[in-house]
View 1 (tube, rainbow, N blue to C red):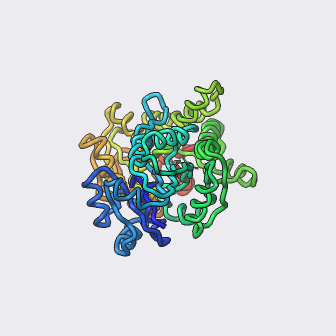
View 2: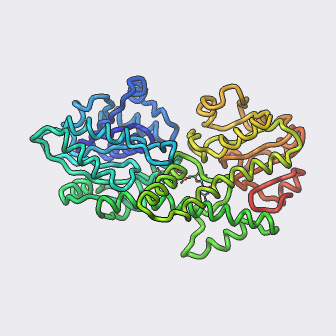
Length: 431
Ligand code: UGA
């Protein structure tokens, strides 16, 4: 099949590489010529394990074509998928400017044959019908098309595996022809097929992310209670998560969820519900608890660290990504800088992006040891593998005072005590 992906962020580029790898010819449309040049040369721009190899392999095979021309890509494609961003507006709604502008460009360039326009971006319920209206308004008279909603469930850091082996593939459309074509495209991919209406597909995406965010905020709420009672949140959540109806996944407390999805999607669903007169108290609490998980952690550092010269391990909102959007580390570092702290940070992938936020207001270390050296305290924000079995004895020897504030519960409190650290972790006894 020949298809087009509009957008080359996590969703667009990963999907394009996967569909190309399955033997399809895939056009990828972008706006920025510099970025397109980098992509054409095999540089994925974003950091995602395995993506560069897959990109290079499929460029070499001639199955991936990067272009800024809708005229080149759209008439040649049976399916056009959109994966452009829907960032939050200041009031928390999803900003549909890019999605609707792209729909207009696609519509104007539709070819003579039937085309499916499938939206992979996370868009509020009703958006695909708006896309349909735009397409109908601008399309050439002879062009025929149908719209579908195919939300994407990939996670940054494991995006390739999630796309090759998803739990489910959601296809929402009113049109049997569109559904059949999308089922054909997804044939080689594992996962349960869920064929639903447009509106259901749109809500499935928001409901899934909001449910996962709810689990995380619930875990954090329980951690607040554990901290005050001497219980250990890891023991508690192990006990809770073993109930198969609940499960342990996404039930880890910490400094809260970040990234470009959960914070924005929870707010967008609150907005959708509120605009329809639905009481969204529950999700508002999820968002509040997430903010508290961050401010509580900052307060504990402020009240317990023996000095203000601190090292930081981890800036990205989770491991295996360079993405720092809505990362708890960034929010908490801001609070600490305002309070006069000096910060030296290390992250295997996230430092370049962090430099665009803080510039030289913080220092960057070449490795985790340098970040901890001569510091009054070390703060851990991201559970990168390389921190798991690091030589903590060596770390302790070089620190001015052996204080660790661990926002991801990476170590056993008892082991840290034996090593001579004052160790603060989330929802566990402060040792
Ligand atoms: C999330 C969803 O997991 C994907 O299914 C979805 O496709 C994606 O959003 C999206 O909408 O595009 P992602 O944001 O990449 O994926 O990362 P997650 O692995 O879900 O982690 C999100 C945040 O939650 C991270 O900050 C992570 O540290 C935090 N988290 C996760 C916890 O604090 N506790 C947990 O138990 C799990």
